[in-house]
Amino acid sequence: MSRRPIALSAAVLLALTTAMATAPPEPPSMSANIRHLANVPKQPPFDGMSTPTTDLAFTGRHAIAGNFSGFTVYDIGDPRRPETAARVLCPGAQNDVSVSGSLLFLSTDDPRSDDSCASTPSPAGGWEGIKIFDIGDPANPRYVRSIATPCGSHTNTLVPGRGRHRGSVFLYVSSYLIGQETSGCAAPHDKISIIEVPLGRPEQAAIVAEPVLFPDGGNPGGTGSTWYPTTGCHDLTAYPAKNLMAGACMGDGLLMDIADPLRPRVVTRVQDTENFAFWHSAVFNQRGDTVVFSDELGGGFAPTCTAATGATRGANAIYSITGYGDQRTLVKRGYYKLPREQGQTENCVAHYGSIIPVLGRDIMVQAWYQGGVSVWEFTDPRRPREIAHFDRGPLSPTQLILGGAWSAYYYNGFIYVADTQLGLDVLELRDPRTRSAGLTRYREFNPQTQPAGLFG
Image (tube, rainbow, N blue to C red; front, side, top):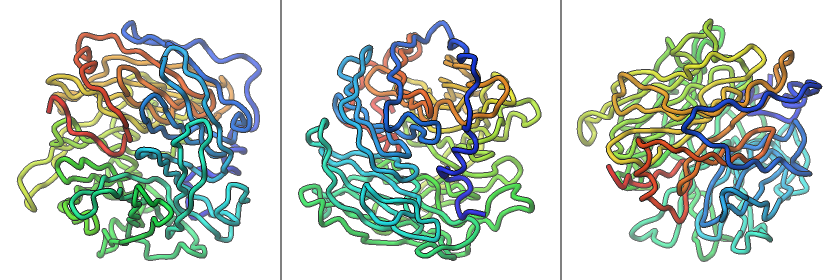
């Protein structure tokens, strides 16, 4: 057993995607209030079935998409005609991305022979962590340096520095241990790594703290992998305006205080052993008083959007933040699951999404792999409901092939979708409930670093 069965490895991907059906995929189905404006297919060397497109980050007129083989910079100055500005070959799962000014941060959660972009897999253990690139010239990214982190970097979350740390950003590195230990990744691994990056001197970036979030060991896990034990975090989402961070940490959901960025404090912790197998990601609403946690049941490989799986597994759980200061707690209000049943050849589960900044409502756009993209409202967290969708249908009617939307985010008037196999999609949502979102313009957007809601 690999130590990260949920972190997609090239070998697993190749096994899952050995052949495509000869028949072309079905044309997309979508609600009347969604328009599909554009698709930019994956291009060599990222066009293989075992090199999925992963997460997205945005800066100015550019979107950066991670890929197991590196990353792509897209020019989205005209969202109806996006173009590829650069492709950088730099293999290493998952290559999740975040940006700050002219710097790009790339997560590698895959032991490599070294930290170069010419590295090869090193299953027994090797380099893994964060790579920093200068994208001041988006057409010619330049590799700056790397920082090795324990158990690698499955994802990274950017937190702007303040006060004496002004001029720096902090990267909160999420990683975890499952199965056998390797060099550089050993139990107990109940911590995160925090890297400080001086923006004017990124070559001096270094780990400045490794806080232990689970001194008691965290959730011990269930029998038969009903739910996973906590040995680290999969994803962290920051709401800097309120000094808050939400942690999706395998068997636990966290609310943390990050007023001191080097000493994050766990304020409260929740578990859902009845419904959640793997706490995967978290999103705050605009006001920062509600958190949506997602469960990646089946690790993204399985067809879990089925009647047999049910409406509360492989879904989102909506929690209200109640109380003040250290007395804050997370109270579960409801669940949201994709309302359209998917087939047995469609991997489908709650995955990455973001808030659409609209007046007086809580509305989220979210990727569901081959379940497509769902836009849903949770203004009343006890009665969440879908208001729009985009769904391509199965890649194959006969085989389970890893595919579909990995991440879907709203950015300056449009929805951008990283499709694991089909590249970058651009959608336009035309709905009176979301029209006020056009008043919000971002100069930069990292989905795991949420800006304060304009209408919060």
